[in-house]
Length: 311
Image (cartoon, rainbow, N blue to C red; front, side):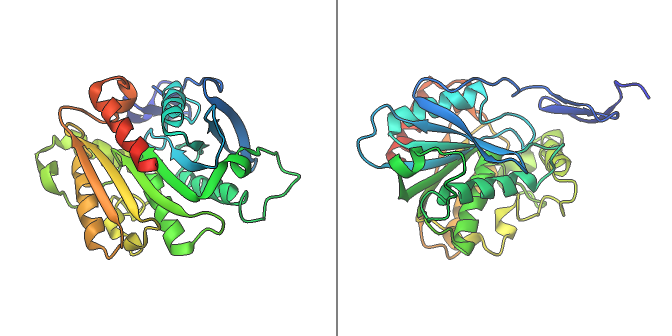
């Protein structure tokens, strides 16, 4: 067998060859902690889960705590990627929050629901700083217990990270998590999908629609399909149990996923959830433009909105 034979081609994200070799086509660069105070921490050895923690320069009082989940279709990028490191540096500095950026395992080596399991493990680790269960022999990172307000917790993420942020919010609401109080969730260009086309999806090129569905099947081979509750929130019987009082959703006009984000807001209002959701559509922009062009007018406006939401 030629070692160049391709089993899965999900360009521009990832290729997997028939000999098992995985080639990530983007999102592989990493940078060390810097700028605002930041450091890396190991949450779990088995499975390997870690995080990058961020702390503003001035921390005279307890600050809101933001738990962030990076995007990348569950198969590329990292909490240590330059674009996420730079984004969290900027957001933490402006919003004056403590942040935990979760490094979860990637598919295909670790197929879903590994990323969901790792994200929940990270949240339990966060909560352990406030509920009295933390083992004093564990690696100490007193930033959370010293500077974070456990009663002002927020989740956020972009793309598949927004998917994780939503489901962690639902799990908090349905199961609870002693020690922390979730106030709000920020979703940027969430990666939601479904078998039945909605809104303008019917006008999208078939290849674009198929790529979204194929990426989900690739990262989660044992899934029931695009109506899996982990990718289609409206199919989740616990959807209305989202465990916070406010949600902020951003979608981009040129993003193939925007119709799901718009529909998410409508469905959440009708679900029986007792909270307030705001959905903002940015005209003329595509998926995750705030990361590729962070100084553009729309990205600056988005950040100001998020900063206000967190405070």
